[in-house]
Every structure is written in structure tokens, then in C-alpha cells.
Picture (spheres, rainbow, N blue to C red):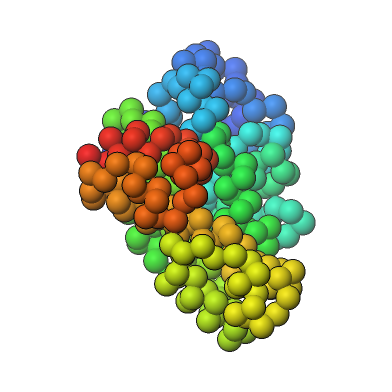
Length: 318
């Protein structure tokens, strides 16, 4: 695990007060444009602590890209904990062995092997070793459309997930980390978003399996997947489902986690991405054959999703 990734290493025990007095630590923050956390306390304590920090990014890139802030994995002992709030960051917390304990949004969670937690670090939260050993990894990210994407992909009740395809997610995580070492912020942003989509898709599959989804909505989703390139209106889809438009939109989002329009846009975007990667078809034609109303609308929607134009996306995939 994490082969061919060159981490910095720190072993031993240190608190936030001790670290903040270290001139080398403050110089590291300044070099990497990392702001100090004010509402935080922690003790880092473990036999093995490996971490990666980002290369400095311009303010423009930090504004438009979902960017990597930090990553570390640690084999922590009983004293390890972090308590924090008011930090502009999202955190993916991976558990590999042992157990951790998380307090977040009024709920308590036991974090066991194969669990992934998603945390908005602006909100009060605390996590610590449960027992004597917890092997886990922390991935912090922010910027771009993350403040829209993360709440849209993960409901508040989905703070902790146990994905079936953990090894696939681990491979995607390591793929993303390698782009950081290569100082490729655009690639890092793309691979980070792909990791979020993979985690979300796995979780939505489980939610659907555990929920009793009405047959008319199952049929509608299959219909959308076959006809997403067509002009699908809410009135038409509601008629096919045999319910009112308002009820259709509400129930579709309740059962699948996104609205019909959001799902159609997601499918059209995937179709366009495939064409950009595998063909030389001009952008205006891809817009037409992927169901977008115009090239301008396609470019606008694509930039919202990827923080780059279709042409820039195509160049990164060559």
C-alpha cells in the first residue's frame, strides 16, 4: 500500500502547542500557503506518521480548482486525537486497521476497517483512537465547487460509509497522490473528484439496495439512462411515472439522492467526457450529440463540473 509514493516521515508524539512553536513548522506552512488553524487541538502520537503537503498554488487556481491540502497516514496509539472547527477544508478519513471514534453533527461513530468518513471541517468534530491502535489516513481538500459538490454527493446522514469496493477506492487515492508528487494540480483535481464520485456511487448503490424504491421510479431511471440524449422534460417524465411533477421530483431525489435534471446532466457529461478522451470530434459537435442545448451551454456546464474548458480537459487526457 502506498508504494512508489515518497512521503515525509515523523515519528513520536507532539501536540498542536508544541508544533506551533517550531520555526520549521511555521516556515513549512508559509512555503505551502497553508493557513494556521485557530480552533484546533490535537496530539499526534504513533509509531509511524507519513505525510504529503501540496506545492504552492496561485489564488486563481485555489479559487477554481478543487485542490489538495494535505494527506497523512498514521499508526496511532491511544493518546492520538484531533478536535477542530472553523477550518476551510473537507476531510476524507480512511480506516485500515484498528478502530477510531468520531464525534460529528451530534452523532457518535465507531470507525472500523474499511470505513470512510466525510467531514466538513467548518463544523465542530473530534476523532481519536479507540482502544490502543488505529491505522488511518486523512485527506484534506477544498476550493473550486467543493462546497457544492460534497453536500450534493453526500447527505448529512452519510458521514460514515463502508464501501464494498474499498480496494478500488484505495487505488484511486494512490493515483491521485502520485499526481501531487508530479506537481500536476489539474490532474490532481480531476483524480480527486473521481475519488469522490467513486465513493458516492458505491454508497448510493447500497442506499438503493436497502431502500424500497417504487417500481415506477426504477423504470424512470432506466428510461433516463437509455434516453438521456433526448429532450426529456419534467412533465413528460412525471407522466411516464404516473404522478404529479412536484411529487415526481421530490420522490426521485429522496430515493436516488439527486434530482432528475441533475442525473440527466451527469449522464450527458459522462458521454461528453468519453468523446473528448477517445475522439477528435470538435467541441460544438460533442455538445450537439451529448444533448446540450448549445456549445456555450456545454462549455459553461463543463467548466462548472471540471473547472476547465472541454479543450483543456481533452489536452490533459492525451
